Length: 217
Ligand SMILES: [Cu+2]
Image 1 (cartoon, rainbow, N blue to C red):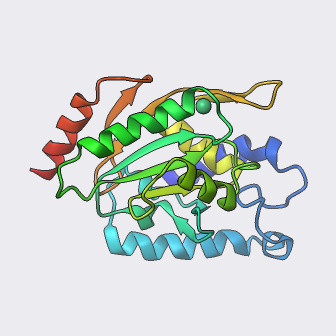
Image 2 (cartoon, rainbow, N blue to C red):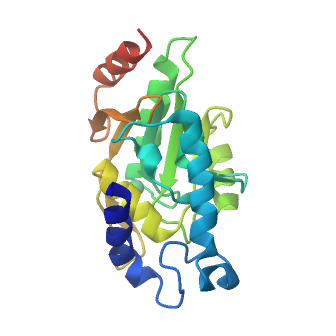
């Protein structure tokens, strides 16, 4: 039921982005897949398989069925990231001011992690048109991100918006083509449930690290 409501909202949200596509859920899918909504069936099958593996709780972000591409161009659903704590932030690589600082905050958390921590980092682009997987790969190099630990994601505009809504992140495109946005780092537990959010740039990372340590104990 929850997912059905979700889809309805998503259709409404994605409408402005997909005027020429027949499937509002997967405007990036090949047209022949969109014609009979096989794109949705494929995503659902992936989701069902992932769900069977992890059985997420009702509030898990891993219930979201959208499909993403990482910086190497590999496709995944969020549930593929299950099984370890995850620090998640929304950002875009052309950002000159806030996002570099947000990434720096994530790196500060990474540097402070206990040596045995298996926590991973996920950055989701709010500018998917420019932040192609190739661009995200370049950005990972520029930012010296350890891609065994960091995943950068490109997704359909409506899917980014849906995820942002679930995380309480707000963003809007400005006339210059840049974005104004919240600066929030979300800590998910291994099941994809939100356990903590760090709000604002340069925030004290200790409460975040304390929450993480409680997950491990
Ligand atoms: Cu930014």
